[in-house]
Length: 67
Image 1 (cartoon, rainbow, N blue to C red):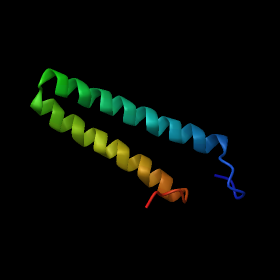
Image 2: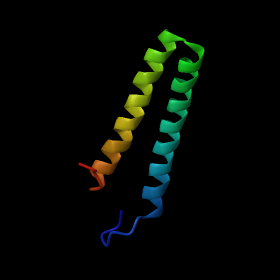
Image 3: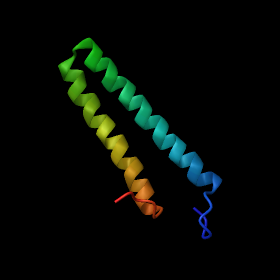
């Protein structure tokens, strides 16, 4: 983010990457639920939670936390 509060291209690119990773992880979680695959569900839930945590940490580092 720039000093005047305007979002820079690098910020948008990184945030988009984090959103894409979160979306992919959620898709895997959704498939495990649909398939009734408890083992993969547990693993996919952990991965999804980690991707969400990375996105939130990124926003916090940028001063955009939603606390």
